[in-house]
Amino acid sequence: MELEKYKILLVDDEPDILEFISYNLKKEGFPVFTANNGEEAVKIANAELPELIILDVMMPGMDGIETCEELKKIPALKNTIIAFLTARGEDYSQIAGFEAGADDYITKPIKPKVLISRAKALLKRYHPANAEVAPSEGDSISLGGLTIDRERYLVINNGEELVLPKKEFELLVLLVSKPGKVFTRDEIYNAVWGDNIIVGDRTIDVHIRKLREKIGQDTIKTIKGVGYKYVV
Image (cartoon, rainbow, N blue to C red; front, side, top):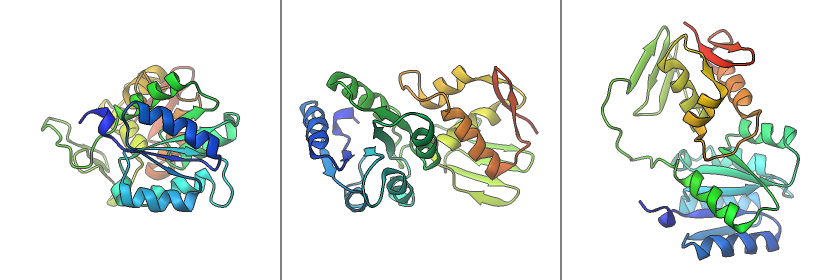
């Protein structure tokens, strides 16, 4: 599917920003929907099923973090890419955003060409829910009490089914694919987020912490100054 066929939902309480971003994305041929609050965003997303949602963090009422959490509860949006748009500093908002299930982070103000480039880079990583997965060794991975079904996006840990956000799932698949191998931070960034997507330095740390909470604190080891590895 051509990138320009993908639908984009913009959510921001500032009309000028909505108009600016919408205008530039429409110039590239993208179908664009807009919402100026979280409640409206959830309704539109549920109806239109956009492939990409660009979501402001600081909004009155339901803020971006809460909105993202609500969007992640909608099964039909499980593969939708969510990028936060904010002028805030990195620490609190980026960590909170990634914990809520966001895929990326865009800092405003942003130049039109950069915005378009980021949107296209994000959409290149979109995988339709009904996309066929080529049969290959590794569609299902079993290791100790952990089973990962890559085709169904399903993780079973000691008999318990887990629902993981997409990036957490992809990170776990990567680490489990080669138990004992130390994956550097650069290798993880490139494999999970893509080398054409810019994310904050704390992104991997947040996702690792969330995985440890779900599958056990001792399963993923930190190799200080290098990266992470999965141990049995």
